[in-house]
Amino acid sequence: MKKLMNDVDQIVDEMLNGMVAAHPQALKRVDGTTVVVRKDAPVNGKVGVVSGGGSGHEPAHGGFVGKGMLDGAIAGEVFTSPTPDQVFEAIKAVDGGAGVLLVIKNYTGDVMNFEMAGEMAEAEGISVKQVVVNDDVAVEDSSFTSGRRGIAGTIFVHKIAGAAAEDGKSLDEVQQIAEGVIKNVKSMGMSLHPCTVPAAGKPGFELDDNEMEIGTGIHGEPGTERTALKPAKEIAQILFDKIHEDMKLESGEEIAVMINGLGATPLMELYVMNHTVADILKQHGLHVTETIVGEYMTSLEMAGASLSILRLDETRKKYLAAEADTTAFKR
Amino acid sequence: MTWTAEDIQHWLKQFADQIHEHKDELTDLDQKIGDGDHGINMARGVKEMNKLFDEKTFATPGELFKAVAMVYIGKIGGASGPLYGSAMMKMASSAGTQETLSDKELIDALKAGKTAIEQRGKASVGEKTMVDVWVPLLQKFDGSDVDWNAFSDEADELKAKTKEMHAKKGRAAYLGARSVGHIDPGSASSALFFQTLAATARERG
Ligand SMILES: Nc1ncnc2c1ncn2[C@@H]1O[C@H](COP(=O)(O)OP(=O)(O)O)[C@@H](O)[C@H]1O
Ligand SMILES: [Mg+2]
Image (cartoon, rainbow over the protein chains, first blue to last red):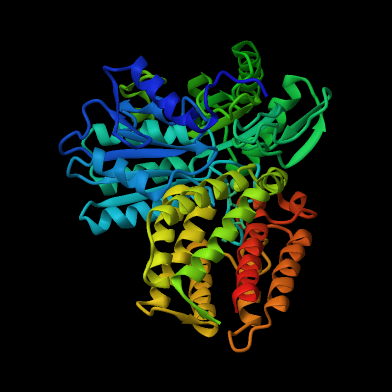
């Protein structure tokens, strides 16, 4: 394992210090926690939007803290959900009296830890609502299992719920708008190369030079299927088909698209993917209102990408285009 | 035997030793069907628990369980943190303010902990989670006349049985059929939890 680090146990703490030191005018840390909030938090009278999860997904989630997106983000250990006490600190730090929405990615650990934090906050008289993002179509959607994971589509939830909160919507309204995003966003990822959790010291799986994993999540785990490496065109088609099968997109629909890099894939390759994806979308007669290409929800140094498609309506279109001023996403 | 807070502390210290000893093994299991952090998470939790034991002494088992619950909830993270933490919390309520616990009362506390895991995680038997150790084990041993050797063997067998299960809950569920053929990491740490309990009972009972 080769990483730029000092002490493996301090890696999250040192990252957060570095992040805040880079953006002192935008971010602050809640002392003694792994919580980062907007410099002006809590914003009086505004619904607070909080998200978080394990570290290793940078810029998620701290990079999306700022006007028009998140009020606060909690960083857990690498790929490990933050604990309830930390989430509770974030809720307290951003509550401006209008309540707090928790945006949770659908992992058993995250859901349980955030729920426990919500219970703690409610006990102190803070209104808390939550939404659980489950955009990953690689996993079967079933009520008999934990269901689908939350991956890159979560960024659309941050963006749109954050803009709605900034626009003065109530906690119930922001929650409803966020639910609308979640129902209409689907993603699918693939990987070319695994990643190494610093404390584990070795990669999560092995891949030969001529192999790839399809249906990978964002925690360095193997995907749902291993296949021979294919040209970008065919990979894009596999990702799109699986999303389309679920969303049943119709010609003429308005959508937003995200090509998200998993950490070690150069922008060049992400643009190649987007070139191919744009072709496929055109063939299906879809109107792409917004295309986002870059690293937003990574998996340490994993190579690979995910495709996310968000179906738009007037509300989602308006809030997607609204102003956002965060260190990793600006509009 | 009669369990004092000190006996329980002895058990949990042995549990901590075993977690440290099997840390890499637990992490390897989690790399196969999860995200490769279970050993790391558990080790972080029990290390902090040992610190607590160095700093404080406890008058009752209930007080000890409660303090350990707070450490687990605050330090382990992931899915196992709230699960082990909620279990300890309910074990604390079950143990109440009694100064000592009989075998039966300790098993009753563990049963309350088992229920907490089921409620928090909403998993059932057969879904390849720690529930597959906790539930059948505590169904089989009700606390009267516990044969601790059999208890320990049963925990080990239940852990081994998770290998052939197809995961329906937790991260392993994302792998679908690919989850078959590997032992569930949370079941492996739970087996250590119960085996160190049995070892303490044999040593001190
Ligand atoms: N819903 C659930 N109910 C009971 N146990 C669960 C559940 N989800 C996960 N687990 C247990 O937690 C273990 C994984 O713990 P850990 O790796 O520490 O957390 P995470 O899965 O968040 O990375 C699994 O092996 C399983 O035994
Ligand atoms: Mg894990």
